[in-house]
Image 1: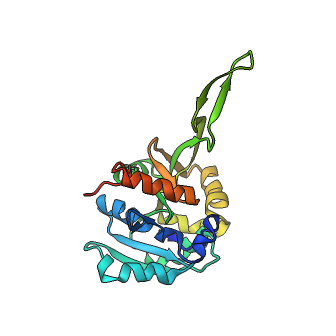
Image 2: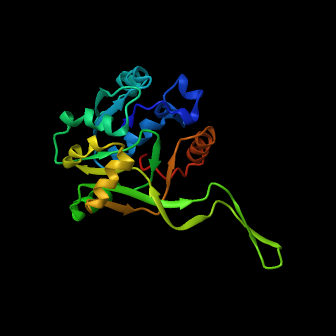
Image 3: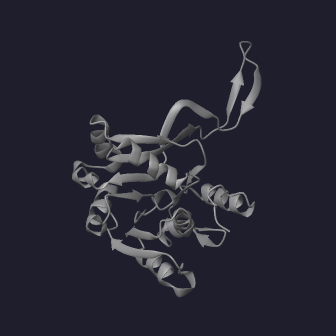
Length: 232
């Protein structure tokens, strides 16, 4: 889990608390993320920590917050490291042929088992979850007489898809990380070699990038209809 960044888009709130520890329903967003993975049978986690790492570690080693089946390793990957550098730092901790990666401030309703099955079936080095692109703004529809006839709230922008995080990587990915940024040079190199697959997921995905996102996460949770929640 990549959770070492400074979260500058939510500054100054993240100057005092790391974004993955921002609470949703009284629990950190990061807890919700691990809880979803755990529902699908994944209980061993490596947290790539950096900015305010001590707070993240302190939360999860607190006996009051420990989950029975979770095993968590903490790897300090620096406060200024890129995503590629953070992943490189955990190579020696990976014992399997493939591993899963998520951003520490994103939640989704994606089915992790289906994602992994898709990755294994494609036999690619890397798989990313792709989600539809939606406008950040409501739009107005105008007829030929220059009359406004309808409004659409944050419509889907066809036919585009974006990176929705939730990755599955074969360990061969470590041979590519020195090429540069994960989402740019690394993925571009993999795509050029036809080694990057996209698992299309037309469901809930949301990142915590602003105070408004934080509010919306809590509203969803408080409604009892949070799409990412799959546990009692």
